[in-house]
Image (cartoon, rainbow, N blue to C red; front, side, top):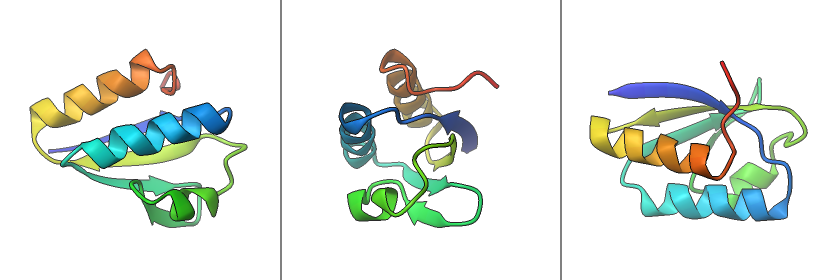
Length: 82
């Protein structure tokens, strides 16, 4: 399954939380800032994006694992309302 969400990373702690959640997940995570795509588990890649605007995140994997990861984003207040 594939799910797309938008996230906002407001500061250092949210960036660290985002990378930690992604790294623990077995899902494939792609992040886009409008023109660049990076691996959502790469802090170097993430820091190369424009973090001042919402990021589009595509999560690919098992339905339950995707739901758990997106719930984690929500509990850390990273998700933007669609």
